[in-house]
Length: 72
Image (cartoon, rainbow, N blue to C red; front, side, top):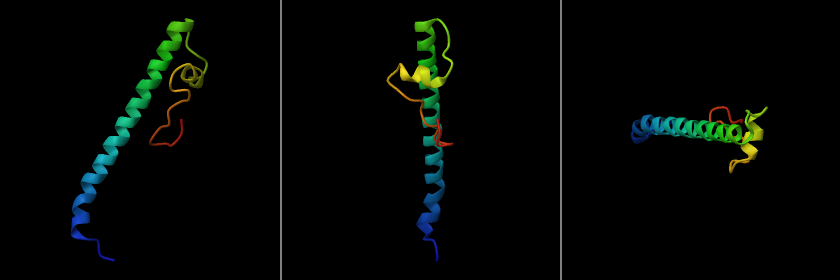
């Protein structure tokens, strides 16, 4: 099957946009967890034993999913 010329032209930019989106979502998830950890530390005076404990006390409720690994 032949790939249309337009599809070959757009494949590069679309892949770049997808990678940029994945990096942005990863950065956001990491920042959200850092804020949750700091809030926990300020409230309790120490860091939690697990990330899930800190996340449970915020609007997150659970650890954000890593867009690259598909796991928390």
